[in-house]
Image (tube, rainbow, N blue to C red):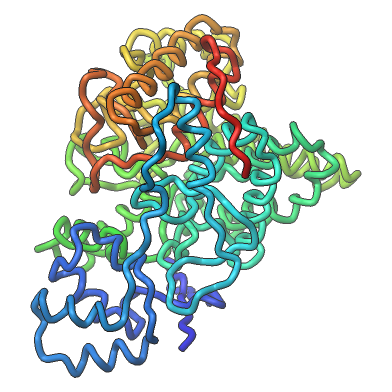
Length: 530
């Protein structure tokens, strides 16, 4: 039985997504089964069930479920075993001891490569044509923005064919589904992640040339259409999906999700948080949790009204500075490629859109008083004075003036630089995208952003501390982690909805890229064939 998943928007528009085998939304037959498995706590991690493979078929499992009288854990465990196979851990293989972190990463790359070019009917995994790299641990599928930072290391490791295939996979997803989902799972099809596809294409362009990469222009345009859907019809103070039109007429973007139910991969956590709220408030909370997941920062005080409580999440009311910087770069790249193809009117239109967005970022997201870039609350029509490393993205894309960059540099140095690198925010909320944690993608953004404005000594200092912390944790644990405690190197990172993961795609990619950039003496890595 081939199911169809639907994307639901604020105006109840439902767009069919073809060729999807499994869905865990309230309007599908499997949802009651899914809900029972999750509520009884069959697995410690909610993600385990939605990643399991259905080895019979949807009709069979629904009929068996309805015929089964008990709903206790033991009875449902037996039912699960009759119809499902547990997901495979993709990298948890004992590696031989190595003399260096670099050799360890070189041996990890092949273990993190996954290939699933044929769609399996009983799997939530979405097949893509070519091999790709997964993060590792509980993350057994490819993730959108993770992949860009992973590619940085893959390119330095000479794995150009693998990177090209990964970019092709994202172009395929855009052509097939109209978006790049959060990850290549059916339950992620209602949202995307930070739009870094243009950054991937430009990284590939450095290796293969612009002429080769011009073929990605249609995919870049599809990405832009997804993020800007509904913008042309908006009136001032209007909002639709991922676009908001301010009272001043400026159009900027927010994070969003087309569903307002608990996330399948975090079902119990979401239901527990919303318990006791009226139905409409529950839906609002689920939407904001999902939008926070689309941001990649799941979760951070950055999205909370009170800067502390997850129950106060209001992601959809915020226009994030980093998201709008990325969309500026997408507009700029599309303009460049149109110009290269002698499509001058199209190039002029997109260049104008990019310039208009840049001006809006400068006006609405720059705090002159604090000397830093911040997010904007479109409902309250005011800046949000919560300082995070998202404020470094304008430097990464050269959107800041020299005077602004100098002030950002001072704040980064005074407030964000810790013994292990750059701390994500200045708030300790117990969430994983807050203090004391540091994350590889943001280390790279700050590193290159500072270099763009000739702050090379500070850039190198931060990168060195990050690499040294990665190496210290690897020596102590034998693992490359998803995130790190940059405030106290003797403690592992914490917070979030699941234990610390190791693997780890983007951590490996960024540390390899930093070493290749000469932040410290580079240790020779063992070459491992793909």
